Length: 194
Figure 1 (cartoon, rainbow, N blue to C red):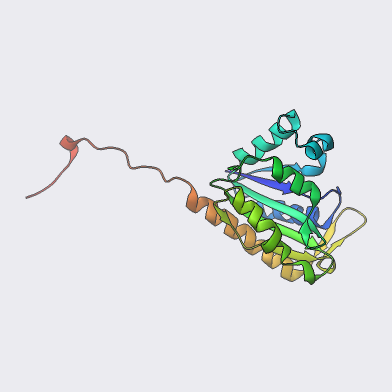
Figure 2: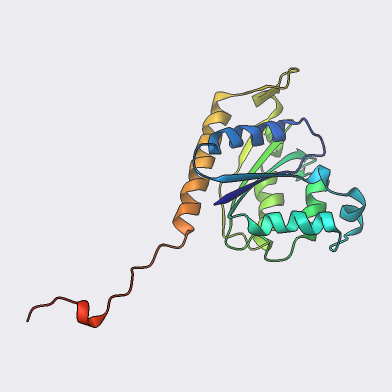
């Protein structure tokens, strides 16, 4: 199973990227393939002009479509997710998240923007046919501290919510995996009594 971690921040070092690093640490050792995609690394011209056929956009879209689960992290600006993430989501096919489990994560300056996950991001994820959108994790700037040496500190309540979110993600994907069928049995092999 492949989990795609989608970084929607225009900054390389951000609190939302730090939360994706936390998710990566929680997913390691669970037998999952983990891929990362940073929207900021996609060609800006293609994002801004809506160039669906640009090789970078086609490759990124393919990553999304191949994944069984997607974790999307974004900063919240003015009660909405990042513009660079919006530009990318607009270029995805209408069924890009079909049959996928999605865990949205967001960071913002204050608790006042926490509903951006439900009122701004969730409708877009639903329009892309996500099978199941898990309850999101929202953290304020004070709950995720970036340390100059490149490390981070995540508040205990956010760490617990990330644990819960990752556990729900893994359980939901495993639940949605097709079960192995019983092998067919020839009628002559059946044992019965009358």
